[in-house]
Amino acid sequence: MTSSQGSPFEKERFIAELAVQRAVLVTQKVYDSINKDSLSKEDRTPVTVADFAAQALVIAALHHAFPSDPIIAEANADALRADSNLKEEVRSHF
Image (tube, rainbow, N blue to C red; front, side, top):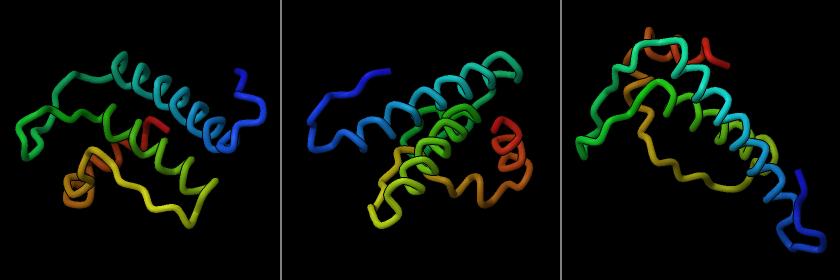
């Protein structure tokens, strides 16, 4: 992987690209290994275990590299907090 030389956000881009690559791998792993059931978000769009796992990987990577930066995510994690089985299913893909 290459990143832009001299970019003011070179480190940020590099970390983001690595996080997305890992998220792609976990998404494919989940897709290949479990049923494709999904939960419904409040706006009635589907959210899957793969969505939660990919988001968690990206957030973890960004938080580790930039601990003081705020992070806004797309999928609400309330379902994970409320359902320990779902949370363990997501964690099993890391």
